[in-house]
Image (tube, rainbow, N blue to C red):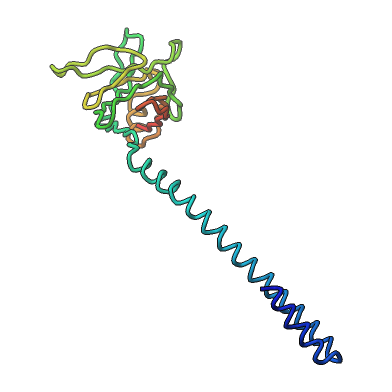
Length: 198
């Protein structure tokens, strides 16, 4: 293609040598157009090759996402109770939270109480204790970490400061200003942190 263009330009130059600058201009413009057309053709070929290679990867990701099932955390909070002080117990005032597990099996780790309005029981180690409801409806199996199967009932307690006045503790419960319970948990081999404001 280029040789035929050069032949035409040389023929035109021999016909009229006085117009050599026009021939040179036409030759330059012609070459520029050829180079640009070649560039566009090459770019189109490269892009179509990339798109062909990229398409299966996109399809693979889509099918992987479609088959991957995300874990479900389904702890439903049913009740919050600040129990009246019971003298003589290690934890005279207990904050009790009642849940049902409406998601996947979940392993609850050692909970930590983050005080806002009320702290933990003084002179005692921090306590966040879990219990499961059995098939008879009784609570049992106190532990500081617990595997909660799907469909099971769960309750926990935190030993709160018993020096705070009863009416003040109940008011903080109503206003949701007691504090926050932070619980590390594992669901379907995925580690998460639950933050519960009772």
